[in-house]
Image 1 (cartoon, rainbow, N blue to C red):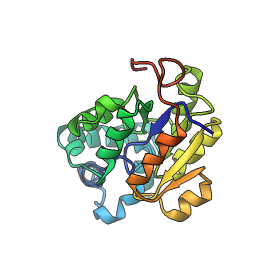
Image 2 (image 1 turned 90 degrees about the vertical axis):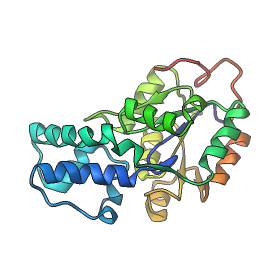
Image 3 (image 1 turned 45 degrees about the horizontal axis):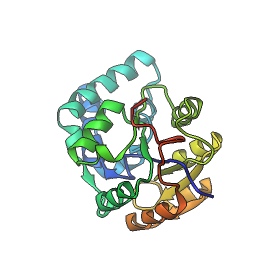
Image 4 (image 1 turned 90 degrees about the horizontal axis):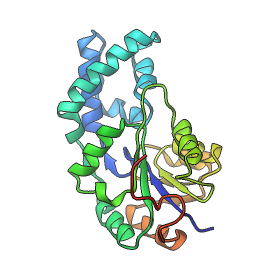
Amino acid sequence: MTHDLVLFDLDGTISNPLEGIGRSLNFSLAHFGYATRELSELTQYVGPPLDETFKALTGVSGDTEIMALIAKYRERYAEVGYMENCLYPGVAEVLASLSNANIPMAVCTAKRQDFAEKILAMFGLLHHFRFISGGEVGIQKVQQLRALVAQGVASQFSLMVGDRAVDVTAAHRNGLQAGGVLWGYGSPAELAGAKPRYLFHSPVELLQIQELTTPCNGRGPGCGSGGL
């Protein structure tokens, strides 16, 4: 099978955001009187939507309380948290190589679109992607991919690449293909259980995508030049 578009997750796939996410979570938790956590305890919350994360960390389920926690988190994240982030070694070079080969690429992340764009611009990577699909409170990745398919910018031949099982299952539920990466925050068991079509053990293995994807010829999903 050849793919017409490669959709990358951001957190845990392109970059390691644990420091910024973890410190911003703790900033919000402390503000509202909840116990803070060691960064090592927060790795499981890299990837899932913020509302799910705060519900798990606090036991709170009310929308008002959760939105207040998220707002306080974003207060710090917007100022400094998004910069407390680092690229996984080799990712920038691989993305440049795929981009130079005219492989159509985009980003589909649970992170809010403006934050995702700021991070990619900070690393000098934004220009590699045809568009950025960001998440919002209450929106699951499966819904994001469903919307991309409905808009005609993704199809059954598109490939979703991410580090968590949610990336794989969201792709499968929308008829897309999926690839898992093993350098992020999903364990090998988690990813294997979701049954991705491909498993990438290191960023350099992503270069295989060039052989699996049809270069953009100006037609088809992912070949548009504008955003959503």
